[in-house]
Length: 178
Image 1 (cartoon, rainbow, N blue to C red):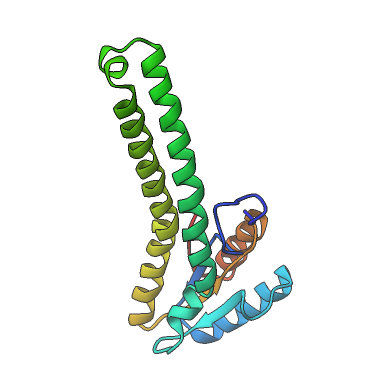
Image 2 (image 1 turned 30 degrees about the vertical axis):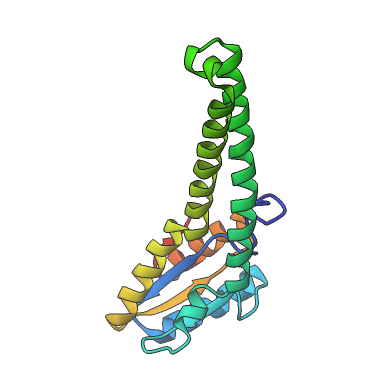
């Protein structure tokens, strides 16, 4: 998925693919083959060894993009929720629900407010990316146990699928976000 198809996201790579190897040599060889296969550079495909001081930046290199995701998703989904709340309030009032008809302003304010908050809660989930957190946790666990990881940040679904297949063919245990 690219940002042109996902206006809520500010990151260039929405998917995180990691291959966990028992030996550093196999990981480096797989990373080089994957870079060639995907025409990617060293920022998109990285080898992470136990004790690497830049592990956080390797796993989440787009800190600025995450902030953009947070701002975009909260603004867009909050506004969408607000609009849906207005429509819900209008439907309740026009539908003749007694409480809504008796207090249309309160109904409108409550529906729009609650729906805007609901939209922003969904935006919070998109920003936190729990699917990526699971991959990061698995990579960190493998590194603590002496394994080496190849981390790929593919730009679209085809590249993510290709990276997963290539790492698996190289003998890695593959973990991947959505």
